[in-house]
Length: 322
Image: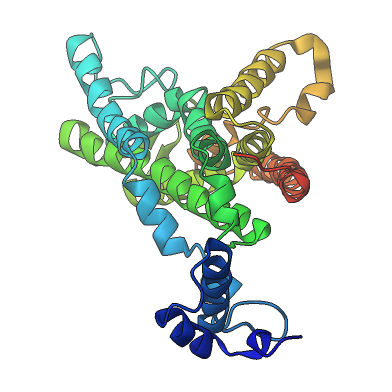
């Protein structure tokens, strides 16, 4: 090796200043050497100061998701829905003094009954769609924007990308699912008063107990929709089209609800992920039957866990090109 090859970067830069190196190849060599000297590299090859646990912090991802227009629209729609229902009942022929009938007939009897109706009419399509939107859009949107490859090149480990985005989606979904009954309770108290919750069977649940029942109902709904979250996440890592991931999860939920209406399937309907979607309605009773809710929660957790594990495996081996 020549003496010039043994020069330090500083000596070579000094010689460059005196016009020793003037060709482009020498300039590129000196630039690369200078960058290497300025970057401290550890014995394991990682840049000094790099910590995988400090990349893509949850607070940063949450702020980023909250600034997105779709998140703001979802929160706005959920907050507006109870007031739309109030207007519908005010325009219609609802009788707030009715003490018998189904949950629709009892909706204006008290604030808790109004909450039950609001969550019930939303549970078929709106609530699964909200969860599918947050989870189905999380990875697929990064791919559609061609930003996923740059995120992984920071580098952020793949398992951390998936975990942080899944946690952020779970928090946003839970917040949205809790916002709906909270606003409905406020609207119900203002319009129909803080009375007892009346069930179709005639049971009267005190206001305080009915509010606690609604809290437990929200917890159950969040757990029960875990299967939608897992499926949407799996579809999100499998496609670069956010609409396809969200729509696919919603479509499966709709098909499952249709099959659940076919009584000829008998006990096979128990294995459908949506079969116990409305088991939380058992809470509006003086004697609560927990069996259906326990079965529904367990079934959803199993489905959700399988889908999440498949999503993690798919994302770990996926060839990210966008």
